[in-house]
Image 1 (cartoon, rainbow, N blue to C red):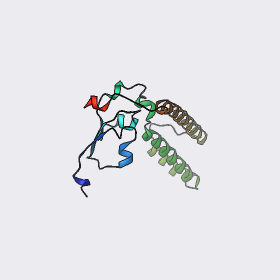
Image 2: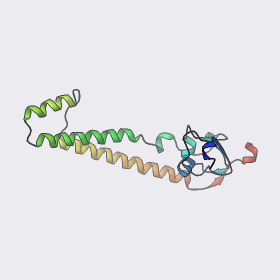
Image 3: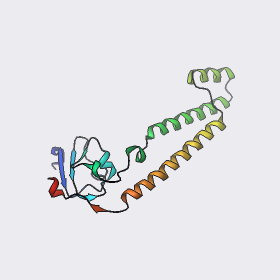
Length: 161
């Protein structure tokens, strides 16, 4: 009923170990302040820069994984997949019986500075990207397992407040 009126939420001794934004799915303008002694803190809460504020110094905690090791920029991979999809579509268009001059004009408009890759080269690049992605995911899983393996208590919330 009053959900629209709430802009700030203070969580004492709860909320630090779960991704609070994922769990509650609040409006964009709601800010959570978390004061929790339970450890380990959820990395999404630690690295959230808009909606979650950890009270206390999360940097003093041990073994918090670096941002780059657990979060991957998926936009780059999406762009690569989109480009390879466009190239596959273009190749199908060129193989459909259209004149050679039409295909050459379309290729010249598509990528003026980028050489056209063969189907085998595109496939090899896709395999290499997938392999690198799997290795990164495996390393991330290992790091997150080590970080979340044990639960414990940090400095008392009563001392922070």
